[in-house]
Image 1 (cartoon, rainbow, N blue to C red):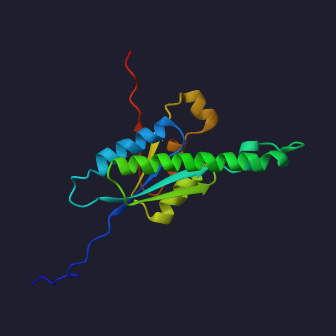
Image 2 (cartoon, helix red, strand yellow):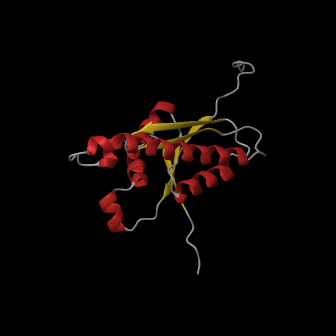
Image 3 (cartoon, one colour):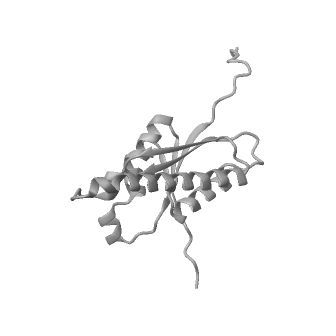
Length: 168
C-alpha cells in the first residue's frame, strides 16, 4: 500500500544565483539564463532567481592609503552606489522583458569571489551562473578569474556563460 504524502503541497523551486556587474559579459549571461531557464511557456519555474551584484568596498578601489585618500572615499562610495543601482536597474528591466517578475535583487559589498560563494550558501542555491570575461592566461593569472574561483569553491553547480566571439 502506498501512503499519501503531504496533499497539495507544492515543492519550492531550487534557487539559481546569477552574478551581474557592469560588463556586457555578465548581462549576456543573465539574458542567456532568462531565455533558457525562465521561459514563460514553462508550466512551473524550475528555479527561483536571485541576481547578485558584488559592490567593491571604497577602500579596495582607492587602494593604498596615501595622504588625502580619506577625502576621496565618500566620492568613490557614491560612485559605487550609482554603478550598483544602474546594474540592478538593467537586470530588473531584463527580467521584466523576459516575463520574470519574481526575482530577488541583491547588492553585497565585497570581493566578487567571496560574495558569490557566500550568496550560494545563504540562499542554498543549486546553481550559480557567471559570465566569462574571456581573459587570456596572463590577464587571468594577474587579475584572478571570478568564474574559475567560483567553479572551485562554490558549493553548487557553476555555469560559466561565454559570449560568442564575433565572426569577421
